[in-house]
Image 1: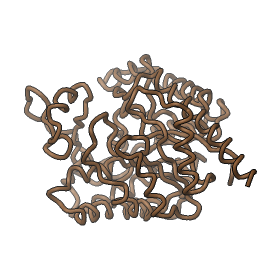
Image 2: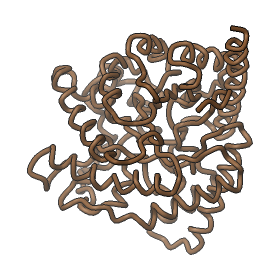
Image 3: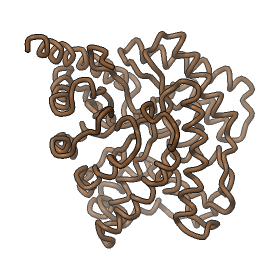
Length: 390
């Protein structure tokens, strides 16, 4: 359906206001926050209203209901996972020994502690099932209420993909990797189905799928990586069977940190994996200086009929606010390839990777979303005027 304009959205996670982040820290420390549900509901209402004021059509709850990071929040909503085992204290956090982290070790040692990249591995030690219905339904209800109050075009909730949900959680229970991946996919289906049943859109986040290439290759081969990724794509398709996938979009990025990214897997190597997914659209990082040139990939690989493409046309990892005319240029470029009705203007990634990690200042985040909306208006004027003239 054409709206006679380019719609706008973003990847989901927004910077938590200081007063709300303080409540999250209290809960994380194990202290009772008696008014938390009311505070969360009010915070979601406010952040949705602010998105609409900035010109965003398809809004999220900012992921405010998640107590930990964008992929590991699901540990709080699943059975079968244990607390990380104690690790020996070190003078400084160890750096990974692969990819950019090895090539630019001096750079990463400077920013490692500040960026808090290191995540805690929660091992899978028992049968996985979904136990987080109360938190999930709270988040869905909060967003539905906020969307209605603000008069937003639509609302979406970001949730995690099987590949990313298991990336930091070693399997110590299931007999095979395939059994493990399909077990978590079956559990995550509860989130996908519940959100759709409530009339919202689903975004499935999977940054670890492309990021794993950095960790595997070398010494593994491209074929090894594609087998690893293919299993997880097939499991996600299995989780989505029978659902209204026209209202599901799949998000990838190359890790959100502000670093060199010289070892990222090229989009061309993984685009066929994306196209295997039975989803209604794709959210793909495209404003990152290492990946902006990859708009050309969509000239070679055709977007399937009925699917949307949401390229990132503003970056989440630089404090420079993109000019609306640059945003419009990026949108028009994609529209000329896949069709104007198949493009949604988006961001590269979330502006916060968890409750306490942000990539830019909060004021700059809102300026970027306003520039995104203005760029979409400029692009719409060009694209629909051009059609009328033709």
